[in-house]
Length: 522
Ligand code: HEM
Image (cartoon, rainbow, N blue to C red; front, side, top):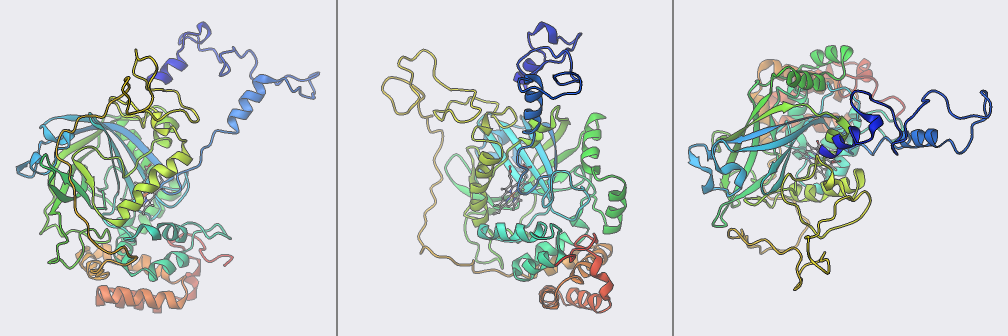
């Protein structure tokens, strides 16, 4: 943020802190900010009205496109402190990533929490997964862990993501979100039964951002100094405890305050009540695990905690609010491709699809040089031959070389490749190129386990929310959903079916969140 401070408190004598004079962006003092220049005091206005044209044309460009998903968010700065171990073992056994190695080592972070489906100023009480994206500014460059509060997802193939999101966004004609469209997709996508079970329970409305978990959801790899890999899943556990809302509680809050989660986070940090999360991982050996009834790369599945314990690796504290929401939170750009040495991708098809999508959308949403913005730039050495483009202000050129070298390789100079520090992880592949589902789809078992593991009040709320929304749906969608819930757990299917039988047509005015009129106009 240094550059910005320089700009606002700049050398211009008329712009000092003790005498804060308004200027144009060209530094011209503004002597009248109430009246445009006109011919006589009743107009017309003149075309050379530079001060007015500047002000208005900049205002006309104040918005950049919202994130296509996760548009509504709040952010905070903080620090991650490593334990140096994973559970009882030295962490170096599994990963050589520098940020984890030493006990007490601190790495600055920026976190953005979000809801997913609705626009930039939508209520924070809506039933929706919550985003939990963390940027670690490590000595080896940035690492982004782009997660959600829920530990699983609706789909396991990235090709389906635009359809999933379209079904959850407003109807393209009425511009109203529709429970029928949401469940039309879910009923046609059996692997989403597990996610729907979490989402329509109180876990689908965390009470605020401080009291929710986070999860990387997709499976990643850790690589050690010998180039050996293991599969890992990441989880954030809030030290403030976990709190979720029933639909009725959420509606009560929404009637009074639709910014409650942003406000809660901002005020807690302002008051010095810094929220903290422990980072834990689950580890599996890097293979297909035929002994399991699910595929470790399938993000619609939990890795059972009894078999794959959650092992602590460090703690994060959020201790500083952003000073400029747009510069720090809106323009922040996270992506699953942003890994450091010692962390790697797994073959998870969703993860690989996501990895294309993030930087692609950010080049469009923020601009080709989004990585030069202070919030996104690494806090370490950056020296690249990539250059120019809109709003480029840094040019990395090694000083003192003549001619100037902005290419590699070169005999004359310029930047050189970094030395290899450890063995590469080089997995071997041999298979046919296909378009195929994974083998162990097992779409319903874990949905049933999750249903049975809920407390009574959570199951109650789940059934009520499902019935209220499914009541607005076509009978074929209802029947398919009852079939899927029954395959998960007989009691689950029976209660939804009974609820629907007892529900009259008057439920037609209840939306996916008990909100108003999803069917209007359809
Ligand atoms: C944001 C794509 C799955 C978590 C986004 C954005 C896109 C996107 C385009 C907007 C990014 C921006 O404008 O900066 C996808 C695709 C997915 C997928 C194509 C599947 C193939 C997931 C999953 C998770 C997730 C499974 C949870 C682990 C997030 C979060 C954000 C986000 C937290 C907001 C980041 C921020 O705060 O800026 N995603 N996503 N996404 N996604 Fe995904």
